[in-house]
Every structure is written in structure tokens, then in C-alpha cells.
Amino acid sequence: MDTVSPSRPSISKTFSLSTINAGGTALLTITITNNHALVSATLTTLFTDLYPTSLVNATPSSVLTSGCSSSIATATPNTGSLTLPVGTLIPQASTCTITVVVTSSIGGTVTNTIAPGSLTTSVGTNSTTVSAVIGVVPTVNLGVSKLVGSTTVAVGGTTSFTLVVTNAGPSTLTSSISDTLPSQFSSTIARVSSSVNNSTSASTANFSLVSGVFAGSVTIASGGTVTVTIEVTAVSVGSYTNTLTVLIPAGTTNNGSTSATVAGTVTNVVNLGVSKLVGSTTVAVGG
Image (cartoon, rainbow, N blue to C red; front, side, top):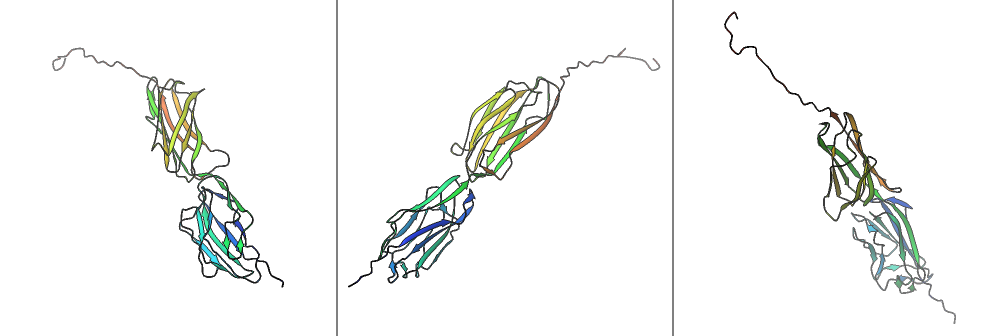
């Protein structure tokens, strides 16, 4: 007597976009196919798609399940997996499709893979590895500001320039900042100080002054702020403008600003002696 051998189920998966900016969203679609022409396939264990660490379900969660009898997939917001429950039934020669909105705040290439044997049903398990790939462009939102301690200072006096860089994210910025000091100020910096809003979200390193250019590196996570203060001495007279520039790494999208400018004047030192004399401290009427 002839018999019909059960056909293994198969899985495919795709992203709706090839590339997103960090913080953007794409649709992840998983299609489970029951290749058996005569028999329905029933999930005998929980099916789980465990994402790479940088990929999570969007908030609020949005997941659609179709062709999977009455079963509904679960994709908890801000977590890295989706599940389809035991007992899910896929009719013969039919498909079950799960679509979920996903996002990532970390730049790079994300590969989401389902291994053989991940799907267990009454007609067998999946036998091949399937993957979907999406590129995530690092994305930051910078606020750049600059303050001068005094817009007018005399030659020989000191003032300060304060540089402030904030990052509203969602990605971490690792880059450098550059500030060419005006010629009216000494090439020797009196003092440099830096601060961050907390030690885990921002840091500074290697600040130095070379040929009149003050520069250093910063690492600022989403929500982080870096503040750097330079104390300088005025050496020549004149008006000036001073611009702070943040260099954005190639391949990173910045939705904010990259520079800030202040202006001021260095004046001559005036050291006057003022006196007044009167010919006589006492004088008569008509005198």
C-alpha cells in the first residue's frame, strides 16, 4: 500500500526596508508554510524568534497574525523576541504570517536568524536556517552651544570660553570637537576643565591646544551632556568671532546642530592718572 510521507514545514522572514535610521522602524514578517497537502500542522512547542540584542519590538507594540487559525503572536514592547503559542494550527498547503514593527537605537548591520528545529509541529520541524538583514544608520540629535565669560576684555586680562554639547540620541556619539582660538588670545591656555552630566552617559579625553586649535574627543550617549571650559589670556587688540565645531563621523546622521559661535572684543589697557588743581582754595567776591 502506498503511503504519503509528511512534508516538513518551512519558514521565511523579511524586513520591509533594507536600511533605517537608528530610532526608526521597519516591519519584520515571518511566514510559516505548511507544505503538507493533506494534513494540518499544529505547533507542539512554543515558537520563539529571538532577535539580535540591538533589535527590539517598537513601543507601542504592533503585531499582526494571519492564517494561523485563532492564535495570536506576542511581541512585548521594547523586548527582543516574538512568540507563537502551542496549539497554533496551520491548514494544509497554507501559510501563517506574523508581522511586527521593530526598531533599533544602535547603528550597524542587524541579522535576524531562525535556526533549524526552531519550529516544532505535528508534521515535523523546519530543516533550514533562514535570516533577514537590515542596516541601521547611527543617528544623533546634537545641541551645540558656546559661551564667553566676558565679551569685552582688556589686553593682559583673562576670560573663558565654555563649550556645551548635548545628545538627544538615540545613538551614542563618539567623535571629536574642534575650536580654533582667535588670534587675540594667547596660544597658552590658562586652564581647561570638563564635566559630564553623569559618568555613564558621557566622557571627554585628550583635549589639547596645537597651533591655535583646541580639540579633543567626546563620547556622549543619548541624554548625555559634555561641558568644557577654556580660560585664556588676551594678548592683542581687536574684535573676534570664535566657532566651536563638532565633527560628525561618516555614516552617522545628525538631526541637530554641529557648531556655535560667539563674538567679542579685546581692548587696550588704559591706566590713567587724573588730578585737578585750583589756584586758590579761598577767594573773595570780585577776586
